[in-house]
Image (tube, rainbow, N blue to C red; front, side, top):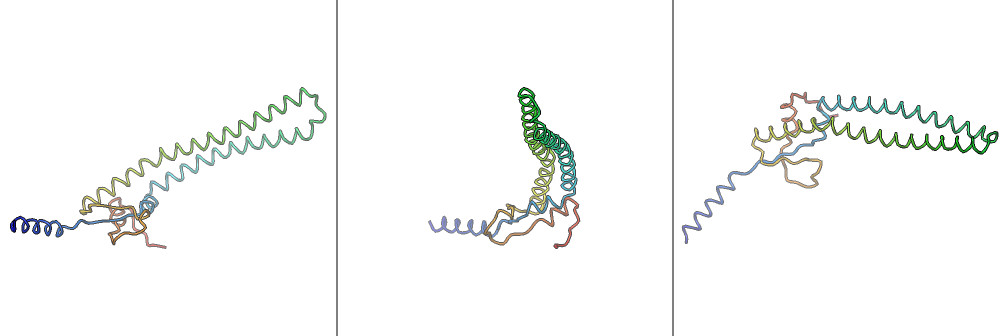
Length: 168
């Protein structure tokens, strides 16, 4: 019995001696430091600007039709008023559908563009963690309280060959 207890104590001491390494990283800081992110943001901004130009053209047409209806509707027959009002409502629906479609398109493009960048960041974090013996790496922006851990952001930046810029 004493022998079993002694073996158990030795085994516990052995596992305590091999403490696991824990690290943390702010993934948003990593993504913002990656040059691919800046290119992706620029690409999305160009898409959004292009969609905004089309939206502004539609809205300009809407305002012009509104002005015409307000100014001239007193001179029109009821049939012409009905037609013009229907055209005006149709244009309003077109603008609303365009806006909804543009938002959905931009969200889809954002996901398509950023998914590979996020995957690259995740793979780099995993590679650095494995190479440096980290058992766990936590995202620092989600932890409210945690014991001290190593910040692996500089290691991941080095792995991705991103120059380390000083904090502002």
